[in-house]
Length: 417
Image (cartoon, rainbow, N blue to C red; front, side):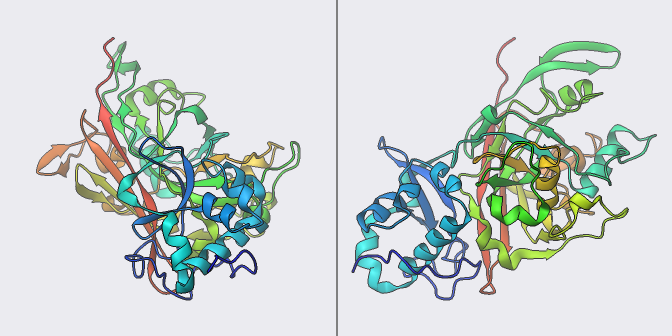
């Protein structure tokens, strides 16, 4: 039987039936998940795929073979065409996928397009158009303020009035598994300033939001329009050179301390999968400006995990983020800045109130003062050869949990200077 081409199922976060794909039922990647990625088998061409259990479904050839009306949006090597197609097509494709992966009568025609996950190489899931990083966890911002400014106010004066952020480098966003070269730059040691390899290399556990539908230059996007523009989410590790950052950041903020590398997951999870994960956002005081209200009072119950050389050192809770994803989008565009398909903006470091909930090693070690025990060794910042893996899960509509693709990276030595 050929796969269906019309009448999509509702694009909600919960699947009504488990998948017929072996290993998918009850896993973090059953039909209530279905993240998209760009994959390659051997030396073959890159293609758009959807993860189901421990398999990848090559959606482009399948859609073309069945004459699906949205086949052109799935034909490319990555998500670019689907992002630009807009919310109606996103929902139609998701409904189609749920149908063919839960109805066993489609097993024969779909199975040839499934590839075991361990046979594929993942690439960047979309072309990153622009990259913006926010600073939206009150716990993280307060910790950083107390570490860097122990005698001053913990939060910048504007922090509770707007989502603070900076414009990063789209060209240095890399896919999970890419090795990270230790950067070099100017840093201060006492009264001396010198050039050399970063000595305080750090991570930041974040959640990224991937823009699909663009907007018109000069026209702000409201918080209520979030679902019409944002396609999905991915995990982000915003690598940070803390000593380079500390010397350069006054008065214009992060630059070389951040721009050398940002890792993202190879999988982008559609917003439709996260309906059951929406929770009430923290109370904001003072009340935010009008453009930051209206459809912006929700957060996401995502449970993050930070693994350092094989050991879990932190579990940051995303539900406690002060500024919400919709507020970040509204602030990003309130001055008339336009959106493009493939724009990526990240939440900023996710941290909770407890030490074991801190999403950066700067906070875990309190600026290098307090050692962290990693595999029996006392550590503060990253050494060459260290590997960091970020993971996250969310509740699904079916009562279980779904997964976000992990983000991993291993530190390489700095180039000789």
